[in-house]
Image 1 (cartoon, helix red, strand yellow):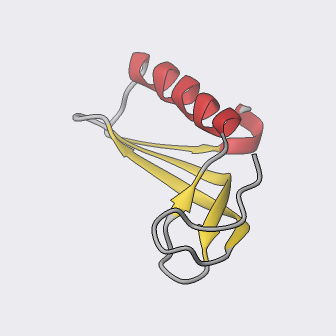
Image 2 (cartoon, rainbow, N blue to C red):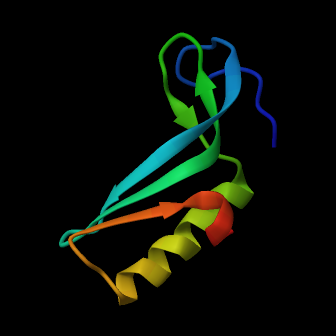
Image 3 (cartoon, rainbow, N blue to C red):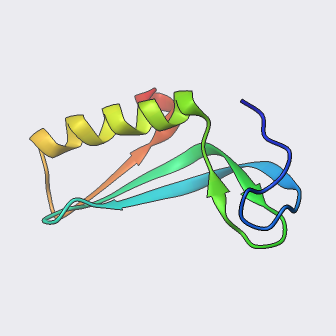
Length: 78
């Protein structure tokens, strides 16, 4: 998947590495350096299906060993 335009505003999407943040209730998870598509106009962030699946896998593993804040680098965890 390599989308060209934002589904929110129609502007151009740029490929960037971003941080993904998820609140799991008792734990905040930050995944750094996630391959993303970011809208140049509104800033909305999108992920490819493969990246979304990998983020789900990472979150599943973190849930079993939660601490208050967990920071993971996307690439080594992939």
